[in-house]
Image (tube, rainbow, N blue to C red):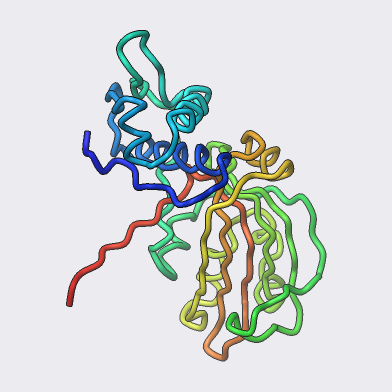
Length: 247
């Protein structure tokens, strides 16, 4: 295994430290960077690599063992399970618009709450449309795995064209279908967070488990926001990869 499996973690919160170690290991397992049956470095080696205490590594390993991703052998070490739980391949957040819409096409939505409240936009997001449909939903993969708990807003100019479809399908692919070249810009921000009680319940996670906080605003040629969302995403449902090249 590479000596650069995990980067040093810059946080003073002990709870965040072990959850972030677990999130990094989980992503490596689910994306295949860590192969089935592969042995992890020792707890002491991982602790030195991440610049954390051995107890932090033990907590992270215990969490992933509960999830069925790791197992320990007495006197031998910690291994990736031979057949980790099946997951839908993570969605790369750097795909861009409209490629991201195609990647989530076919997933499904379960509405928890809906009304006509408009979103609270930042100045950089764009201008408000005359009216919106607001929905709090849980999105699932085609096989029923929940991966995002989201509050989203769709301009009524689009929602009213296909309300039943917007209620059960992914909004972004449907907006691309209806709006096409008129929808030109999507702003996106992402950060790590911890699951609160509601997010944990909706996403089938433990309280405090690592999740992603994802904010999106999709605007048209005139700068009017057609779609806005704030979602909490399972850490094993997304991946962010970027290649940097010296000019």
